[in-house]
Length: 322
Image (cartoon, rainbow, N blue to C red):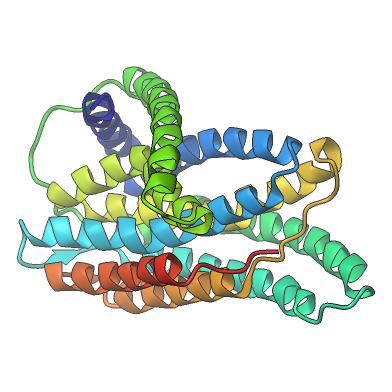
């Protein structure tokens, strides 16, 4: 229950920042602060050598943000507005970055499937190279969208009149503070959920990939859903896909690099095949539904159905993670 009032503050703070900087920058800032807390938590797991948990949280966050957050935003906005429009150029570039990341994550997983002793060093070297490449790609993507070609990524002006935005200083401070509080509350909730999940027979893969990812993204979801209900779908799409692409192209590579410093051994980018497939299909789904720049409630239902299929598969047929 503590998340509810915090979510309201977070939503208004995000919208206030977006009113000054634009929905693209506002969504990016919201996603960055949300992912920053996730990065801190992942670094603690990394230091403890819990690489399987780290990889599951990465894959789960990418799929959850791409499918659940985006689909629910389309659905919630579509229930209030007949048709909603958003900047498809912005959605395309985010989906393109996600596609780049899934291709990069596919390569170590393919090599790892060979299961020979000589492959392990090659996989590690490849993962390190890809981590650096993905960070460079993400940085160039930011330069393109926020710098050299920012005029192509301006938001469509369909927002409804609402509360007056806060001053930028107050909004930024509130955004940072509330994000940290939501992260702390979410972590407490995650611990209790994990205990309950065991009692209900849920597998660790399902809990990490689905439940923890949903709770961990509570901060971003609050802002994305609020934006959709106020016909600011650019903000919602920016938060959902921006957060997913940031995790794939920045958070995951940073964790690989940091594993050389704080981890008991280097971490690679080899995920189990099912995770790679779900990330790839989530990316393709996002590219498909954002191509037109328009949305309605049924589009959200379709995206959510894909997510439910993944969740059901993980629940019924848990992966054999090495």
